[in-house]
Each structure stands twice: as structure tokens, then as C-alpha cells.
Length: 312
Image: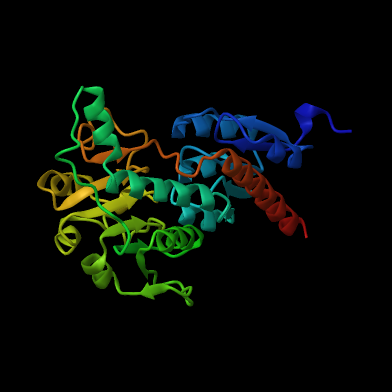
């Protein structure tokens, strides 16, 4: 049997991995980079370990990290978003990139639904007012979702689940996704311009690309309905932060919920802080107990599959 210090290394850019995933990686020397590894941390660690594979939980895998990892063959994302990987450089170096697509879809979709309800019913500001001794029963009016239009930007596994939730609430569901060939029954396919104009609630479920960065901006918000609700459980870069804050303060946007940020964690003086009709969560939409297991297991399986393919 090979001695532990001679086993092939796998690096996890996090502080832990589900036991079910670790069991699949038995025989490898699995090391952890910590909960918030910087680029310098990762460069130093991969130089020391020379891993054949990386399971990416936190941080970014940049060209500099890849160049420092001489034996690296595969980067397996613990989740579906791969915008934290320099894909162009990975292609140049022949490094396979895999994603655990759909592994946390239920968790994210449920979080999106909770965010929509929290915004429509003003749960957070009402809770805060009660904590301050106020009783706003005679003045507050919430939004009723039945009969309203739910607009989904992105119709992958998560978007389709949110569509089901919306329909269960009696909402009319429309969606924009240029990459989907078939749209499930009960969902109206629209252009992005039509979605901005028709939706009472907009929920983002698309990957971040150079083409859609700041998709929600001052111009697109101006084309939305007055009092629209915006929910972003996808990627922070999809939203122009300052434009959203301005729209929230004027009432153009009734309320918003955000679970992902352009810089994570966001700085203490981020413009979102202190905006009463904006709900912030720390990018945990996809982190349920079950999703944690699902993502870890799928990431491990993807890594092993990639290595087997290369050996074959």
C-alpha cells in the first residue's frame, strides 16, 4: 500500500467537505485550503502540494494559481457557477473544468421563493419595526402574489423549480433564456425587453458572462414596472449595485433580495447596507444540509470521472 505522504493530492478550497464526498476520494491525500483562501494562499498551497485535482468551494482559480500547480489536471466546482475560474487559461493548459450542475438547485430555488415572499410581505422591515415598539397594522399594505407576473431570467434547473413555485402561488410565469430549446408547459417565453416590461417580480437565474454583466442597470430598471420586486440568487455581477439602490430609494423598485455580490464578502460600507427595503443574505441560497452533500458528492464524482477519462 502506498504511504499516505506519497498519495496523489487533491486540494479543496474550503475548510471541509461532506463525509460522503470524502469517502469517494479515499486513496487520495485530501487537503483543505481554509474557508477564505486568497490567491496568494492558493498559489503557496498548490506549490507545496502539487495537486492533481482541485475541488473549488471558495476563492478563485486564476491563471497564476494554475501555473503554480504543475500536475493539475481537473478543477471540479462545488456547485454550478464556474465564473470564478479562468476558463480561457484552463483551456490553454489543458485543465478540465467540471461543475456540479443542479446539485443545489432545490436549495437555491427555495431560497429564491423565500426571498420573493419576504419582499412581497415586507417581513424584514416589519420585524424591525416591531423590535422598535411600532405597530404598523393600520398603515402597511403588502403585495399579493396571486395573479402577478413572475419573470425569470434563466430557465435551467433552478429557474424551472422557481417557475413551479410561482405557478403554485397562482402567478403567471414568463421567462427569458436564449439557450433553452424547449420551455415547460405553463411558462411564457418572452424577449428580455418583454420581461422587463411585464414582470411584477423578477428573479435572476443565469450565469454571469461578459455579455450580461450589470444586466440590471439604470436603463433596464427604467423599463420595468413601478414597484417591481427584484431577487438575485445568481451572481452579484448581474446587478449594478448603485442603480439598484437608487431605484429602491425612489420606490421604482418596491423591494429587493440579494444573495450574491460582486465582491465577497462585501465591504462594510457597501451601498446595500442600511437600505430598509433590501434584504441581504451571505451567498447561502445553495447551502442547505442536503445540497452540501449533493454538491460535495457530485464534485468528487466529476473529479474522479475526469481523471478516469484522461487515463483511458
